[in-house]
Length: 84
Image 1 (cartoon, rainbow, N blue to C red):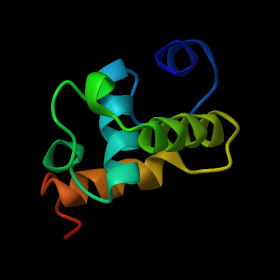
Image 2: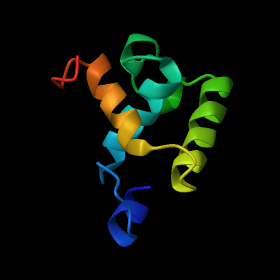
Image 3: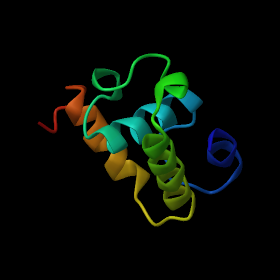
């Protein structure tokens, strides 16, 4: 996804791998992922969580899900925005 963000015409709000991870994992966890998954996440995801994350990434790549909206929600959960 970071490569796509840098090489295609996207309006994605992030470009770095760790930012995509935050958004995707927060979305599948319904809040800050680190409250539900032990760090590092890639070693501790359940099979179901890994499948959900991969499916969500595919939906984002195929413009079926709005990454901007997911990012805003992630930031709200983390109290990093004035949108509360």
